[in-house]
Amino acid sequence: MKLFTTLILSVFVCISAFGQNEGKTNNSILRSGPGDTLTVSIESKYIGSETQVELDVRVQGFDSLAVFEGTIQWDTLGLTFNEVKNFGVDNLGAENFGRPVNTKDLLTFTWTEASNAGISVDDSTVIFTIVFDTNGDVDTEAAVIFADKPLDVSAADNKLSDVFVKEENGVVSFISPLTTAAEVTDLLCSGDEDGKIALTPSGASGNYSILWNNGEETATIENLSAGSYSFTITDVDTDLTFSETIELVSPDSILISFSDESMESDTFATITTTVSGGIPPYQYVWSNGDTTESLVGIANGTYDLTITDANNCEATATVEVDHQMSSSTTSLKLENWSVFPNPTSGMITVRFENGSFDSASKWRVIDALGKVVSEGQLQKNASRLDINLSGNVPGLYYVNLGDTTAPVLLK
Image (cartoon, rainbow, N blue to C red; front, side, top):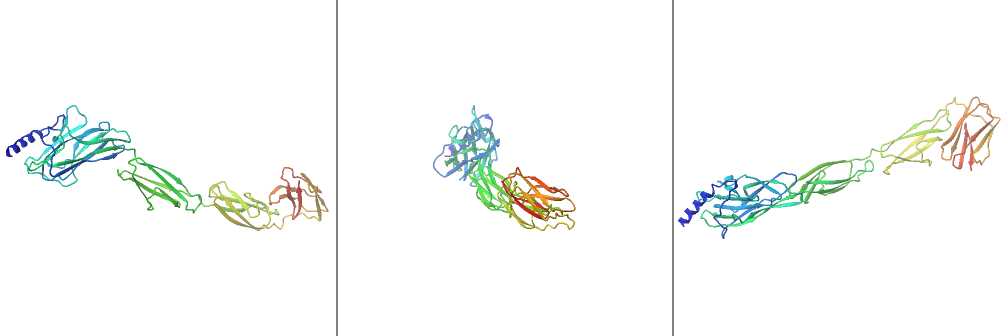
């Protein structure tokens, strides 16, 4: 037994002289056998746009070992060897690794504990890290495995008893970057809570977790008010993350204002409407049935307006009309006047009998909705007035002179 021990140690000294230079290799001195179990695992990783990947080699059951050797092989279509680093066992360094002649996919390693006392390391210790340059295509994999040639993975304890070695191979998966599409539904009306954001993550490994700044953990969040919503998508298998903030917007409130455009000399009032906010165009519905932006030629009273915007959002407002004519306004004083023909097909004549007034007065023709369709000034001392209603839709109209009105039917 002593002779065997001396022989083994002599070989170890020879092996440890080999370095990491291309073309050198190590000769196997051990083969796995029954006994305690040493588990050696090569890390698996997902990578996206990285140009290098580092794979840790970890051990479990590395107890009082004096010898450890083996071969690692990889897929050259995706990986190119760069270096070995991060040594986690005493007496293990770059000089313990070799590259077999005329190979691009093999790396051998041999380690010995010269005093034959044996070395132990904690479970999950990284004993070395292999660095590869990456050139793999997206959605492909490159295996990194323990090979049995030229050196099978072997180990012996401080009594030079073979230790059973369990090998766990690794793989590098080339993945597309982690990203997401987002379907955003903004609010239709001011103050609503009907916003929605739907995420569709893609890339990486496909195993995602999502966390929103409002605590939600689903890809789709609904019933949202206006505001900022931040999220982080984490690929569980790779720890890659993607973060972004989405702003949900809401239209401004619909605001309605009125202005009185009536002249002091006008018998009827004119109200102009100004609308802002919401989403144009707007629809106007007045309580008197009118659907115009402004009311023209209306009597005093209360008028309600409902505005509906392009998103079908509504706002209402009320205007009180109390139009007072100036006391200096000249009014037409008539004991009798008539309109003919009535009904008419277009042209009407207003005839005055015993009419007298100090100055010219305004005349108007108003439709059934209170809209002025024709107007003008009545000349002083006029005995008749001709008005052409052609071009207006058939219906009931009113001829207004001063403070008197007569109905006219247009056929």
